[in-house]
Image (cartoon, rainbow, N blue to C red; front, side, top):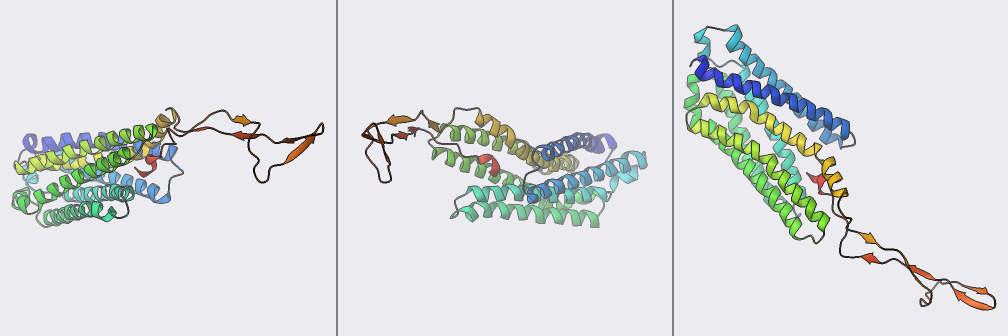
Length: 315
């Protein structure tokens, strides 16, 4: 395997990965600037994925430096897998697992209590499958450090790992869209419908890029392009991190958009009734020898709409 045909793709994917890491740092900074009131568990998860992403880009830089600088023109080094490559795969597994567990948790809370586990169980099953095959790939590449070994585990570990990831992405996307659409169809309130329409679009956009990269990685493995698949794997973890952070950072924008719409609860000017029937507890006062009853004010409420439910805290 030569540098242009093999490590050229890894170098390009490594540069893209470095750019995505910069976006991760920016989004993490924006999150802590605007959402410092979030739950401690959410803030801990943000810090954890940011640290893992930093560790991942460090492993990628080490691998590129090892092959392209330290062992420059040493052709025999191109046949062996440096330790930082499988280490980066392990970090990616942790990142992808953490983000997918987060969205599975949100899907569970969006579901009705009777069907919560029924919806999330397939997601968790394929997530565990992806993690198990991924750990197998990491262990096998640590034990057999030659690139010529990768074709031997293509159908036993690499392709099942990638296929499970694609299935998890499809299930998460479909679950989010179906649940949000179901809430929308049962709502008669314009603001709620508008918010849910926006959330459906965000759910599709969140999963679209990660799904395309996962499909590209799976296609590369099937087509016997292991190096291209490894290069795509450099970036898929960072796409998960950024999709997770974007879902957190867009909440304020969604709330501002909804607050600009026409309110669903309209209270008109109070209507004054002088001859309103006497109710228990009414007080009468004497004025000029005549008895007067306190007038009642009745608010007329427009029941054609009610306040929109804030779904942004669940996504």
